Length: 98
Image 1 (cartoon, rainbow, N blue to C red):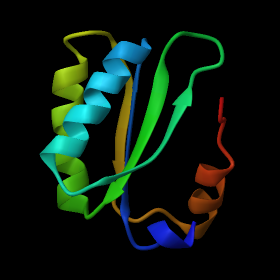
Image 2 (image 1 turned 30 degrees about the vertical axis):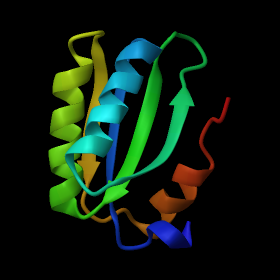
Image 3 (image 1 turned 60 degrees about the vertical axis):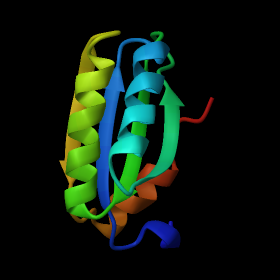
Image 4 (image 1 turned 90 degrees about the vertical axis):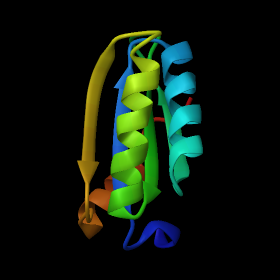
């Protein structure tokens, strides 16, 4: 949790893993971000990707990820948080890991 302190958070989710992986790859190639985690959706075939970096890098990476992943699946969620609260940081590491 400490390693991400002060970093913006980008979250995107697609309805299938292929779209998610393509999106994640494009995000990493577009801007100076780190991939915090990938969480498979327990009830469906999709996944949620969390990325971290400066707000400008995260926004650019999320935009590129959404465009790339949308060619392969349906975007089911996307959001950017410029400065997650300490409570949000705790919840982020307590996510689903499969």
